[in-house]
Image (cartoon, rainbow, N blue to C red; front, side, top):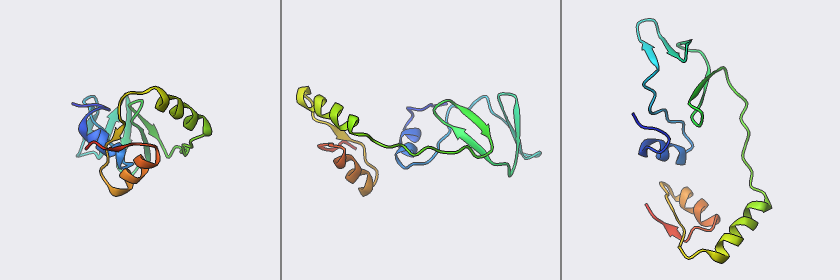
Length: 111
């Protein structure tokens, strides 16, 4: 049970770690050292990639794309700052999380 918005998933994402929840359809065979997801069976030791956003298990290592922020983000956030009436706070589990949040303009830490 659970999903992308479960507490474990949110905390894991904040730590840059994968978290699988709500995976009740996966069949695990401990004796054989395999698991089956959406009709595809994977063996112990095989390299897989988990796409938590789509709920998919992919065969092999998938190339990752590092996200980058453009000036467009800062422009949009500046517009939002000009009209918002709420203070913006962030969830932060570590001092680095808090520093990052402040760098993005958070006015405090909520949790």
